[in-house]
Amino acid sequence: MNFLLGANARMLFSTDPKVVFDALGPSVRALDWILANLECNYFPDGIRRTDEPQLLRGAELADLLDRESGNFQIIWGALVGLPPGIETVESCTRLDLQGEACTSIWGNPPRPQHPRSIVEVVCWDSTETVVFTRDESMAERFQRFFPEAVDLGEYNRRGAL
Image (cartoon, rainbow, N blue to C red; front, side, top):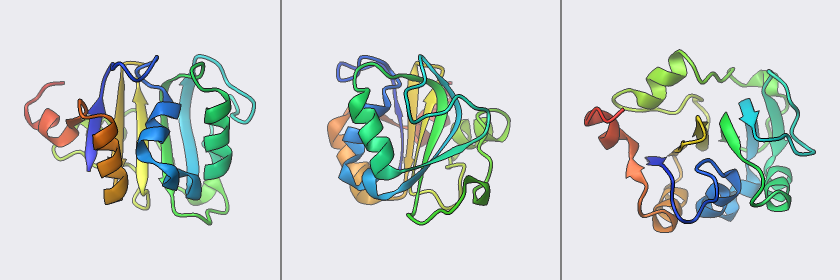
């Protein structure tokens, strides 16, 4: 399932990762997360300002987002949840929010960037959040939490971009 979420009443910022994680549910804590191409309103302790992707364990990232709740916004960036056990970020495909990523996100049909991802959260220019998930329970939780989220595939078919 894939979703496009814009401004809404539940998020102070249109790209608030804490609220998106809450919507996806507690299983995000069990994943390993690759953070790539981040531009943020600030970089909290635990997230490096770097052009290189970085790896955080799910509990570590969820705790960081809980601690920074209401303050931390990702303006641009991708958070990719992978099955636990990722040893190094180098073992993962480099993620990019330009070029191929534009085609994968805004294409018809839209598709996640990483072949092994369980969930991907893409913060797009501080105005929209794109969520891909292969986990049906996460998708259902997200839809219940954000009924205003639109199906990204349908959005792209209508040529709304």
